Length: 223
Image (cartoon, rainbow, N blue to C red):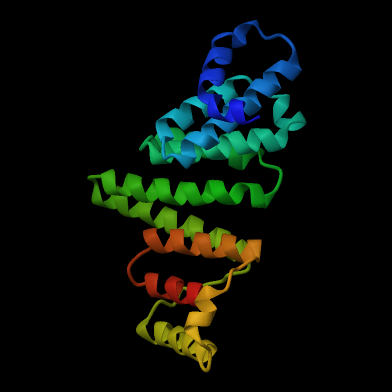
């Protein structure tokens, strides 16, 4: 196993060259899983271009039936591919992949990472857009997507983004922290997976939301 991990890129490259001769489904699935492992190792070293290559190779080995029979593997490949394409600056490719995920994922939780990447892609597309009106629409779409997913996770935000609303949230946050040692709070490890997902999405939405919405999202993270 250690030898495979050490030589995983070389092994995957060699097997990928002969993938067209693979007729047995078990062989194709095994190679798909190997490509996924190679991609994860590349990601851990910030080699996102290499990771995209292995993920694309893995995806090419799957057909429509595998979307049902090996759904977890299918979702893992597509979510990771969307994320690496975003990191590579291939936002259109990432958005196309996300569309497939949202259409075919069997649960809302499987869609959450895709929605997060979609928010990031839209915010980056906004920065590339020269047309002000078009850019503002894309930017608002990113915020809307993030807030909609947060709402489905139980985090609701008022459309009132006035100074008074922000001060009310600030007072609520201050009350929650009253008498608590912030250093102790910061040292605790959060094990609630749902809450970690919410906080991650709050941070992402905060990055691409209008300026007057940012403080409300930041305060909710603290809460």
